[in-house]
Image 1 (cartoon, rainbow, N blue to C red):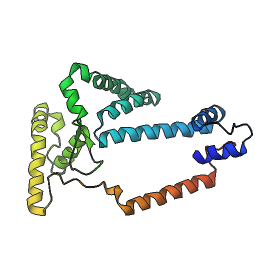
Image 2: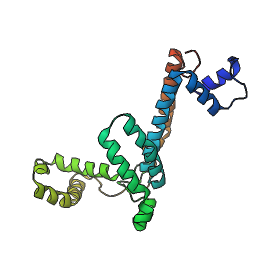
Image 3: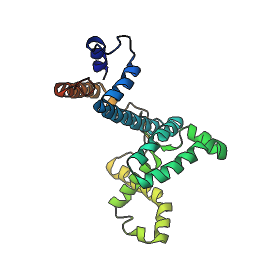
Image 4: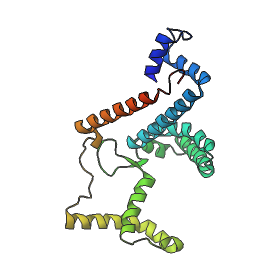
Length: 220
């Protein structure tokens, strides 16, 4: 998109050489359906990245902000149940500071997510943590068929986390696996080799797109 912007200022006689990037994008959205389509895709992708970042870094304010911008997309894509309940969830999050100030302060401290390690950018949502515990229990046949028995399901809900802890301690004693939170360490994609590989992949993708025709360029 940046390359298309630079080329347009240099070669397109209809473009004011002094136009800024945002103004050019707004103009192109009106002129080119393809530009509008890919810009919309990019905006949605960046919004999803913001939501992921909010979870991974325990940033509650960013979580609420990203969620607020995501809500219209559930209506756009006709995800009826998500559209209904994500709106309720968002409202609950936005009034936390008034209705439950103590909980709100804890959420601002990052206690709305789960830490299974101290690695950078590795926090997960509470429901994802539950699903990972469920996966441990399912591997051992611990909850198969319980969904049809409400009493058994309640007992499992209470005892499940403790069962996972016992399994983890057993694996540690037999296999040497650790069930404790590790010391702070970089994210696995922060290594030099991972960054070099990522840079090469980005370059290859950009080259492939440009060879097929820059979708953000006028006349493509």
